[in-house]
Picture 1 (tube, rainbow over the protein chains, first blue to last red):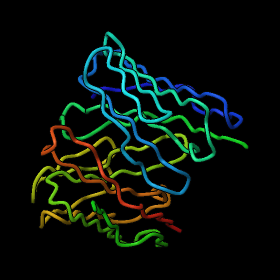
Picture 2: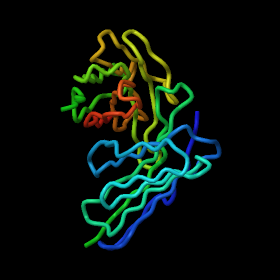
Picture 3: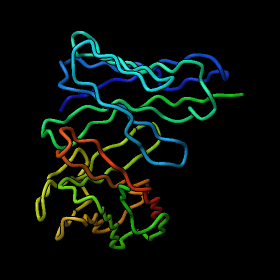
Length: 111
Length: 114
């Protein structure tokens, strides 16, 4: 199925700094989802992007889908300690039912 | 509120034992999934089911089987547990009713095989 590479694998920032994680595919994606997993928790859906060039915002989080629908990014403005966790980009598998998760970017925010 | 529950939060079993992991969702979702999560490897799909009694292999089905006799329940079975099956197991469910298949996850079962 469709696979994605996610970078960086880890990111450590000071509270208040910005953070960006990138997701790249070698093939055109039909859509892309983003999930967040807090330490000790389970993945929680954040958003789905479908349209070429789409930009969506959720408070301090900005999600973008590339014009060619081969890449996506998640940007967090002015990180807070509550942003700590692993962020996964997720794409549909060949079956269309299941999802393929990227390996995630683990974000650590120190006060 | 949407809810996916898993039978155990922590489980310790011995090599060779048969292990059952249960997952129940109360959202009337047609799709259910089992993943395992290991450090550095992300989430890997073991099996999924898109309807009662239907099952499809995921990326790593070896050593596992599943059962879906009722819509709300999806069981993962380790026929003969081995130490390399020590992992966090996550169940999820989804539905296409809202136009996209957002997955809702259970809290996970941390399985240790000794």
